[in-house]
Length: 304
Image 1: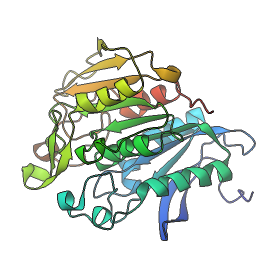
Image 2 (image 1 turned 90 degrees about the vertical axis):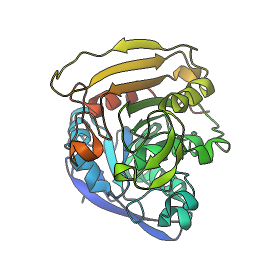
Image 3 (image 1 turned 30 degrees about the vertical axis):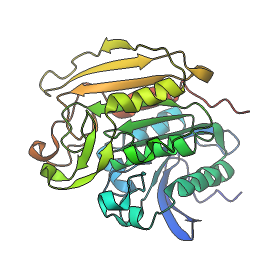
């Protein structure tokens, strides 16, 4: 196992072949890395129009910092032409990934296997988060790779209507969804995803509630959520956060929805990558990276 080139505390490029395509990603190795110890893997999927490196910028390097503190490996894969085949149809978006039906599920599956083998990743502790197009992709992966993924954390994305009927997971998955109530691009109450200023329709998604309820029902969680208002840590950011938790699921799964009242198409605690007029406000009441990792580390896959 030739690992000497990838020193602890560094980020490097990784390429693997998947579906006949050369697929690239950035991998951050924690400071404490030791090949003899099994450790968790966090996969972070960029939004539409981005690349893996944009996820590092969006999160202010938050997952890298947590990786160094907590000892998990982070991977930031690149989509084809800056998009993921998240299950929306080619007639809905016109993106190459949908037109060519790029097998991104197969790619992520191969990447997980590759890293389990290469970095001694614990197969019971593989997690996926993502923003926007990457968040919608999280839901698709949970449908299709449920046997490999312990938990997902989609931010500003929902289940696409297109895949709902074919979503038949083989294993429960814990879900932490973060949705902004005033998202101008991915509608909180479901409907068409749009381009900036609503100029282009890009496929339909379920509402945040219905996306979360799908998984709460599948995981056999408690019927009604425990609702908690989070502290207003930044009274000037124009947002308030509440969590709605469905607990006691199969195999100790749980499903949580964080609703950001006043939040836009943004990553809480992250980089305001476009003006508020275009994407809305970024909540500073929670740090999404910390909330997501705290959730992930509580959940591991029960392997049969």
